Amino acid sequence: MPNYGQPIKSKLPHVGTTIFTVMSALAKEHAAINLSQGFPGFPISLDLIKRVEYYMNQGYNQYAPMPGVPELLQRISEKTEFLYGTKYDAKDEITITAGATEAIFSSIIALCAEHDEVIIFTPAYDCYSPAVELAGAKAIYVQLHAPDYRIPWEEVKKLINRKTKMIMLNTPHNPTGMVLSKNDLLELDRITKDSQIIVLSDEVYEHMVFDGERHESVARYPELANRSVIVASFGKTFHATGWKLGYVMAPADLMVEIRKVHQYNVFSVNTPMQYAICDYLDNADNYLYLPSFYQKKRDFFLEQLTGSLFEWKATEGSYFQLLSYKNISAEKDTEIAIEWTKKNKIASIPLSVFYHQELDEKMLRFCFAKEETLLKEAGKILRQIGQ
Image (cartoon, rainbow, N blue to C red; front, side, top):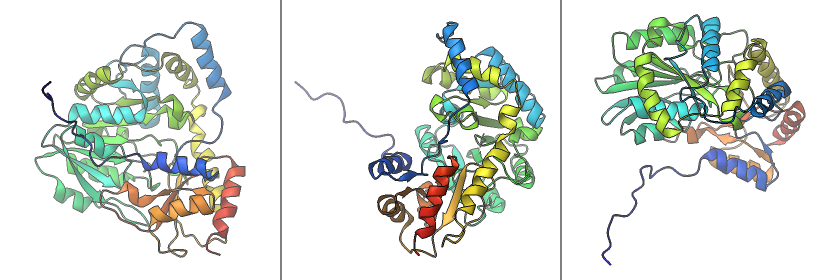
């Protein structure tokens, strides 16, 4: 028989298993404390669980409408206006997604095409550039550097040209914990003014900004919001990352295109959970407490490091803390992360894997969204390293 067809050619030839999967598996294999993958290590609200159970028992177990349950869309619109002063139309400008990653993927695939350029700030969450590549577009990388990881806007200006289709933001920032300021958003507004450039703003840690600062959502800036896509996560906000429930907000003309991809990607997502979260959002205290909650965890974790050889700048947002080990070892961060997981029983994420071109500044990322007993145990291990 003739050998018809062609061998499979990978569309992502340079992509392997994510570092999060690798480090979590390594932590499990060596019975190490896992502060690598970013998930909360404490229970979610029992009230929220009971609400899901209620809606399951009431028979809300079939497909939700493709854009999302209308009541939840309306509640998100109200929440956004309450927090940031901008009103999104519940019918045409908000879509419930299978987590923030799907929202990011569907947005990039829908809005970017061959020959387009997308500016990405690195270190960056690892789902950004593969989606850009699958869309046929080209990622243009801007490196951020320790200790502040501020965006060099003058460099960004020089990179913008007729091919620039999108600029991707992430604030609070994963993995560095950097938070964009009002001046950052104003500068971005000036740079993209009177252009067709789309801003994709990943704001999944919006409720985790510390030290009295506020989250500078793109939604606070009406002209900027008119050319932006905002991604958010219920999984991050309500400690339920396994639910994979998020949403995307954008002007109606952009949302039309995003929904075209969304409907043929997942169509719709978890019906009873959408109804449960809609109810849970009735009480703003269910998310307004989070900055204080996570700041206490950040401060507790850093207190445990007193007397250690690590250096750090307290994270401004998210539930990640970077630690510099330059006073302890000159080994590559990828090697030291594996070594300490095996030998010292503490798992982290090496920062260099978040860069397009490897930049090893001797930094490790630790997730402090854990119970204090675990953070105390982790601190004891970290204090002993290198002593």
